Length: 153
Image (cartoon, rainbow, N blue to C red; front, side, top):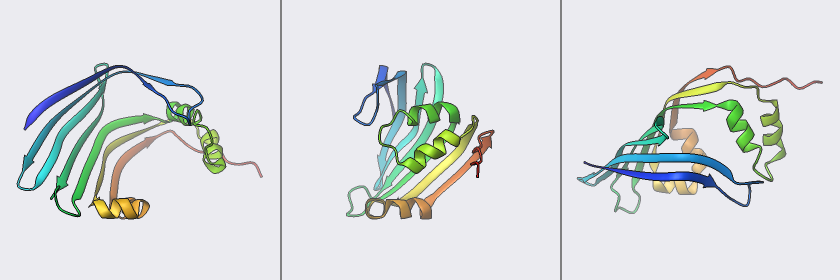
């Protein structure tokens, strides 16, 4: 496999759903790409912010040139800061009321994801994406501290 690096400096997230642009900072992406026996793989995809690894990904496409290729994705080695994620999500305009209410009740904490793996055919993902996630997503994670504030009755 051949290893490649892509670097982006001072990334900014813009969009009509955001109240203002979000500055993301400097990122690099490294990956090894391979193709053999009907299998296309992006192996050891590593996303770094400055010099800190954020996430590691392995992907594969089985029979990429068939009418219904299979896709496998494994993501791991990352930690989500719940309060920072909450603040970024609250910047999105027109969130469903239920989502916004849930976010406002969320207390600070973190989630460390060891691995999240999804394996399904492309047709299944395109036609019934939520069902594909329910049936094929496996996650191992450790929750540290976040909780929902109880509603007053």
